[in-house]
Image (tube, rainbow, N blue to C red; front, side, top):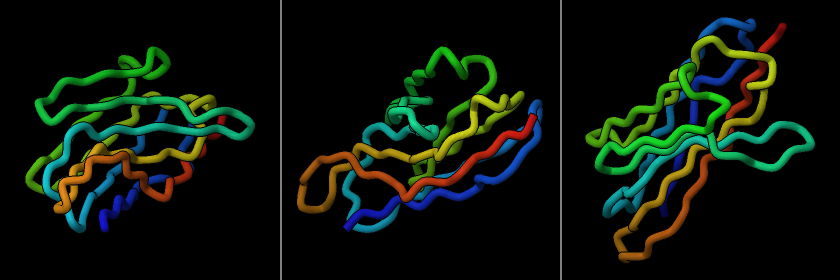
Length: 120
């Protein structure tokens, strides 16, 4: 079993900052990419940012210049530093990991989600 556990969500005022963390644990062989997605009420889940095992990064246009993704491979943890947040950043944020488990199965694993609410 592989588990992803997010933390760090909450309520923040527009223009403020928030840092999300996601730790992967369990029967992990290797972790390929990790990333963050979000889903606002009534909308589809969308990509926020991803980071590969080699450090290649991809951001959604809506968060470029404001959000920073990073990872600590030794801790199997990915972070999302959110600066200059806007009300439209309000959503449930989900951590994703493309992980090969010890049975050598590679699949997409998801965290339970953490709510981020930005007040205007």
